[in-house]
Length: 397
Image 1 (spheres, rainbow, N blue to C red):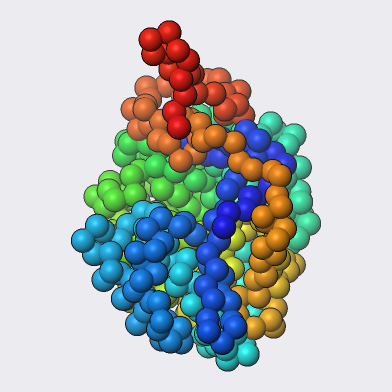
Image 2 (cartoon, rainbow, N blue to C red):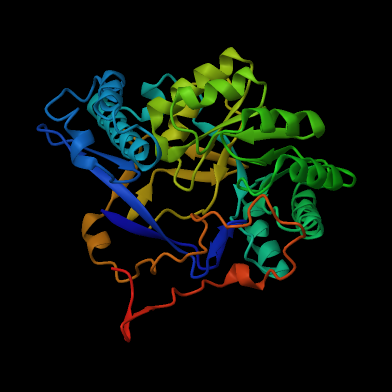
């Protein structure tokens, strides 16, 4: 099933913006013959094919079942949305296993402390200055003292917005220096990345720069890392350990990230690989509840991304945010409850995906000669122009 996240404001990044702030959230529910239902958030692509690998199996063997799902898809490739389907099913299996044991997942995985350090992430590139400040003031009220903003299109605008969020968090922290991160979502070439970050570092102390160049460019990420003071963070779009190995071998990443949608087992394995290289890990995602539980059990967790303070419509989660951290509850499993009836009755649905949304890489990404001067377009979605064929107006179906 699919619900929505209502942000009540534009959200997006250097690649584009959802102007209405309504973002789809796919959920997979897995039932057992003993009446336990597990939930996982992620795509449904090739769901029947992937599920065939685990149907009829004992869900408590979750890590072995994860490998069965990988083997099930090895010909077509377990990347992209298919990897997300595997991750959603994997998370649902962990939810079932913990519910069967009558424990919250963080306890089942061996966690000791239910508190998971967080940083604020507003997906904020389409906001005015006033809106931007208001958003981060709310995060600051929940004790967050580090923030990651979206940018990469204009050095001066990035400097201005980083300064604004620095002022908000410094005031809330009574003068303590906050953590500042910039995420450009693969928008730059290697030279652009070094030039842009060096310019920002003249006046700002950046904790990390996220995805400065393409996700698979191990050499380029290493070049950027050597040319700047900030750490290089990447990994949210990497699927499978085989995609991390070249980056780690090249010394191309300082903060190893993994997306919530790729599942719990993937995160645990990525964390172990990063730990073997003395690197910290940081989960990414709007509803990272599965990885929050897993983060309590790994030795190298740094901080987890906090996007919206509210869950998707029809979903409730047994956790709270206080003093700059997620605080996990005692509900068995993930602590995630899905109201299927409420989701089926939703009248608010995402609009038709646009050609300039965050999921579509702009044609000039990495090849812009000058900064993008007009930022007004970031808060607008262009509508698809209907095709005209033989005098008839047609739109894609």
